[in-house]
Length: 282
Ligand SMILES: N[C@@H](CCC[C@H](N)C(=O)O)C(=O)O
Image (cartoon, rainbow, N blue to C red; front, side):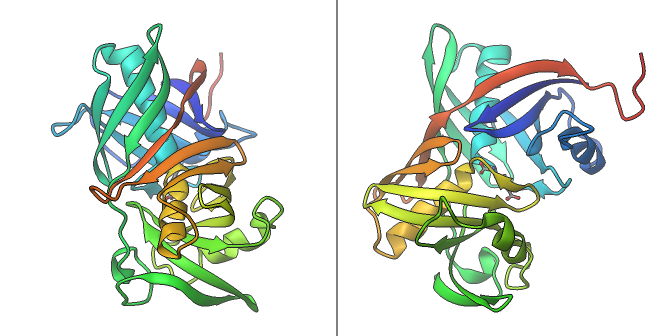
């Protein structure tokens, strides 16, 4: 299996261009390929597949083998791959994902994709649709008891579920202690991604993330979008915000005009390789 290692702000992926639709779920393959000691090492395994509804389809499997509906950083990576390795023509693309058809705009210089803007869609705020175990139109700063500590959760789906928590110091927050406990809390029937946020100003946030199925990552595009939505809903920021992540910055806008969230950021190629299989030998 030929693959390309890519990343968006350090959120890293093994990207596979697959001309035929997947016949079965590559859960086990994702686990071994993403293993940082015995595999290539990545937060996720991502497939570029044919689509009848868009320029191509993306499927993403987390490092634990679970499939996610959405991945903002991976969409930017596969859009760069599609332009530089497959199409080389269109600077506006459509990508079919588990969160619907996403529109993408490429910023190209010298035939290389520099930055990518993605329409991340309209955030879902209704409790059962996120889903969380609360039937409310908006789940804003709901107290949740986790292992004896109270967290005020704002829940948002960007196609995938997010729990946004405002803290005094996101950069120094013990993400690895609390992230895994919140991820699997029964309040989230499909588990959740968890964002710890500190507001710097009405245009800037600091964010650290614990991702469902992948653990702490250097960046999460859908999480940055959910965090800006939560910040707007709670009156903490305006709608156009720079999110400072461990791996770098994302520009997020929750448009007042159409209600969609737009994410802009980089995508990088690291290397190409060939996966020889679990029992590989020369
Ligand atoms: N890193 C991603 C999100 C990947 C999927 C997530 N772990 C989930 O299970 O929902 C992003 O950039 O959005």
